[in-house]
Image (cartoon, rainbow, N blue to C red; front, side):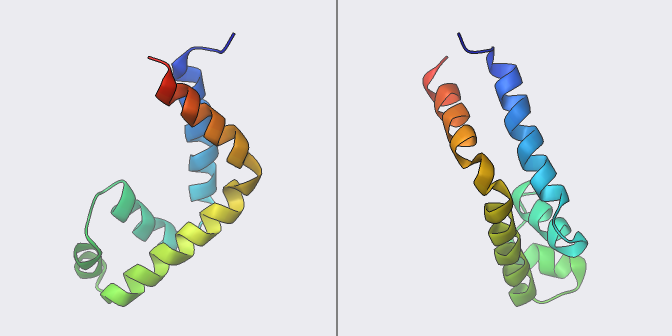
Length: 88
């Protein structure tokens, strides 16, 4: 039988947070402002005094690095996601 939902989510979050922490500093900052802070690329650019294009490039770099870092966990994360989605 599967463990309760909380430990599954905790495991997923740990894996993802570890991957985010591996990002270079400015790249991580921009990614978190975008994804957790829900800021637009323009808002991030204004806040950090950089161009929108730089923000876009850094988010692209972050996503590529996260994809590589999370690749070994892809099946596990997908299964945990499905279980969480399908189970109440």
